Amino acid sequence: MKLESAKNEIVVLTGIPGSGKTTLAMRSFSKYNRINLDALKSRNKEKLEICASLGNSRSIIIDNTNMTRQARKRYIEIAKSHGTRIRSIYLNCPLEMALKRNAGRTGRERVPDHVVRFYNRILQVPTIDEGFDSVEVLGGAKEIEEGPGRMGTHKRRKIEEQKSMDCFLSSHQCRS
Image (cartoon, rainbow, N blue to C red):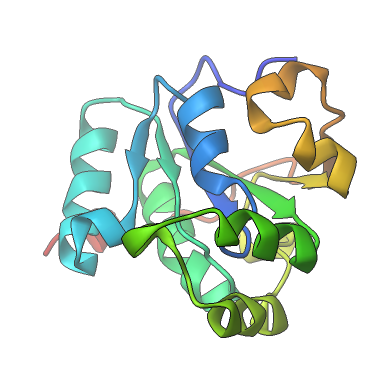
């Protein structure tokens, strides 16, 4: 089963630090423009990059923790304003596994353990009623440990699917 879509889309990853978001983005979505707020350093640069990609009919993968509905809302609004499909992939990683992976990181990549635990506490699992066209879950230690690079062998579970996109916002969403 292939994760990349033939159509232009935005994929929003959700998961605690150490859950495998960046690995998934780089291995399974290599043709997508990977957007990461830590790398871009500002929401304005992030928004400009997203809009430029959509303007060039390029698919995007949002590689941030996206822990809350509010954090994900901005991407849903941009997608709807462009008439672009948007889906969520939630990496349901056990806390202990994320902490173990994080312990293997060095430098700026390493997140303090208390921050990983905090993100785990505030996590709001993505749902279709937020405005996603679909929500998929990668979960369980075995599924995540096998590695996102082997996504074709994973069972992807669509929790919910929206049949129509009847809510479009005005195109001013991407203006600075």
